[in-house]
Length: 321
Picture 1 (cartoon, helix red, strand yellow):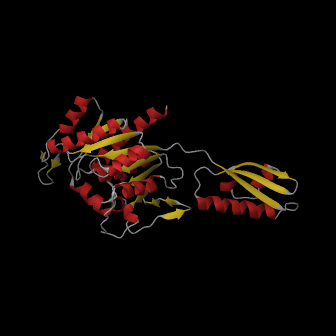
Picture 2: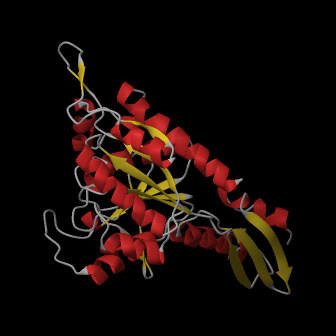
Picture 3: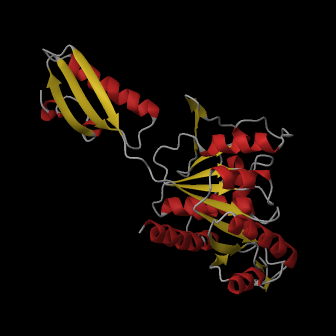
């Protein structure tokens, strides 16, 4: 038996992954490229190859060896010094926008005590499977796999966990079976507490994005989050100013209830790239509640997220060069 004999016997999708096929006495040995396949897909491919070869005369045993290229996975943390600044919404939309650019991206909802990603990605009520000791992320309809404590606890259940338990939960989410995912966006809880410290110690991100509203109080807290990443030697990719400008739906006049330009001015002062502004817009809030991220569309609100995603994609390309 040679490789072509096997290719004629198995489906085209499997045949494309066959690296070699040889007979050793009465044993057929096949080497298969399993890069990007789930555990179930690997098992199915092995069954098909085995069944096809066992039907051939002279074959008494079939051995299928799986090989896979190790995926170089990057981690970007999305952080803020305080809650309520739209960090989770940015994470969701940035992930969807990057997916539309062709990046294989997944989301880890690291806000152990207040998970939002199941709702934002329309995956509420779903449960991740487990393969061995690893969780398998939930597939969202927007092509972004996600893991969150929101999948593992009852809705509205309060978690009263101390730091070590929260840190262990985060490790389970990050060390999951992410398959061919190239980039993980970590939606961090607000502040600079146990979860952030556990991440820096065990899963140091390749970069971080800071989110803030323009108001002075939020900027002070965002600066604290920036100092944490600086101490952990995590480069800050850039700053995003959220809830920046509200256009009246009746007259069109733009007002700035949270101030204007504060985060951009801070970015210039500390010489960190300013990635862009996200407006305070009703469609963004409505989209978050319905699990339909604006970044999945070509709307005006979607373009605000897409512009930031393009800058992040450029950063990833430079880092990979």
